[in-house]
Amino acid sequence: MILIAGVSSGCGKDEPTPSGGNGSNETGPTTVAVTSVSLNKQTLSLVEGNSETLTATVAPSDATNKAVSWKSSDASVASVDNSGKVTAVKAGSATITVTTTDGSKTATCYVTVTAKTIEVNNVGLDKSEMEMVAGDSYQFTVTIKPDNASDKTLSWSSSDENVATVDNTGKVTAVSEGKVTITVKTSNPAQSASCDITVKAASIPVTGVNIDSWIINLGVNETAAIAYTIQPDDATNKEVTFSSDNTDVVAVDSEGTLVGVSSGSAKVTVTTVDGGYSSVCTVNVVGSVGTIEVDGFFYKDYGTASLELIPDPSGAKKYSGDITIPGKVTYGGIEFTVESIGARMFNGNDELKSVTIEPGVREIGAYAFSGCENLEKVVLPSTLEDYDRYNEVFAFSPKLEIEVDPANKVFFVKDGGLYQDIWGKHFLRWIPEKLTGTFTIAEGTTDLEEYSVFHTSIDKLVFPTSVNFIKEKFLCGECKTPLEIVLDWKTIAEVNTIQKYYDDPSPFYLNGTDRSKITVSVPAGTKPFYQAHWLWGACGKIVER
Image (tube, rainbow, N blue to C red; front, top):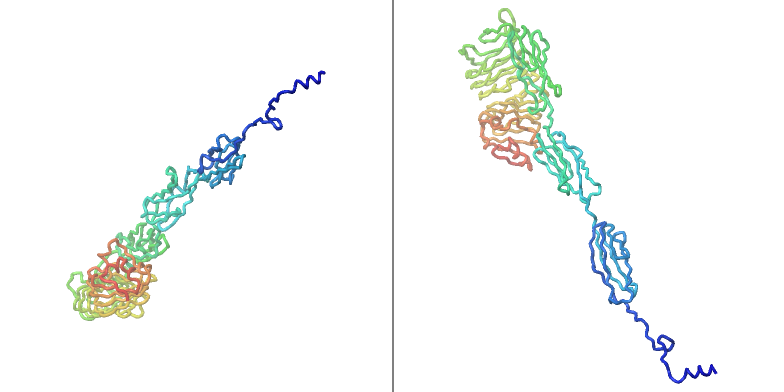
């Protein structure tokens, strides 16, 4: 009964079935799919060590699953974490990709990473001050801090390039005497370093020394200074010492001042400190000085058995015709040696025809045979050692020729020109004024002395390449023009061997000769060398042959 009643109560009307059951009409929750993803930046620039967070936007906004993942194409350049934070690691480029979990939709950002700039905070040079010699070079060493500075570019400068120059590697070259500051600057304007340099003139070594007069005559208690010349004229160290081989006769102090102590002769030597070169002269000391006359000649007696031939003290006597100067004379029962011919001995003796000098004479003074209009010949003895180098001796004697005793070891004549071999050099001392046409200086000649080419009548003068020194009064005394000078140096170094010894050489070289009418003939291709030269460039014309 109870069962029947229960069944009966369940019948009669259909009830709706709860949704969600099998075969039911119940509706569940709706899923929204992801359609795309985008980033707030498509490109990103970062400096090493910096970071920035990218923002990903998932569409549609009501997508059911908005989860995303992040990835870098090169984490060594730029890394990215799960929140989209991008961190720059090192210089380079990388692509950051965001991917949706639902649908694997992607978006990318191209990241460029630049190196972090590290400024220079200190720069130093290995020297802050130093001395250099003109012509020398020095390579600076530079220290830059920190070691990993981004820009180590350096720039160099000199405060005076006439004193020293510097190249872009820091190599400094000393140019001339003076003071200069070399500065190096870095990419950081606040960082620089400098070095103060004192440049000294280049040292020029001494090559020789010559006492100007080989014979010096003094009275007792008389003083005189030794005149000497250092070669070259611009040598750096011109310091010398003096000595006498007989201080009982001649004393000499550190300044070269001679003092006659007693009658006699002594050798006085001047020696260069640089190189130890020396030159010797004879100093004669006499108790009294007198003048004597023997056979029509006048002599100065120095009391040392040697005499100097001098002009007539009264000025009345002139010499004419053919004369012989004795090497020895006897006076008062004493034999004397005639060692020198004094200054102006025959100057202006227009009637003089020839002079033969016998052995004994060692030196000839200034102007001794100058201005002798009819003098045709002078014969130099075997004993002659020198004649005045700084004044005319044979000038303005237009007919004069010179002969030399073959036994003379110092002087000789070639093609009419008088040469002298001394001090290891080969000097041209004189060419006759009467010569015309072409005169070729002997091969091997090294020095052209003062008045060697003086008041000449030649049309052409040919130099050997051996010439390396020209004294001041060369081609002076109104030499005939037009004149051609033939030179054969082929390099600028050879041309520049001939140096000037005065800032303004015009009063000395070519003095009195019309430079504008001098043609200098030079080898093909060398004209610019000669044009730039202080002497040849001053001539009227330079032609190549």
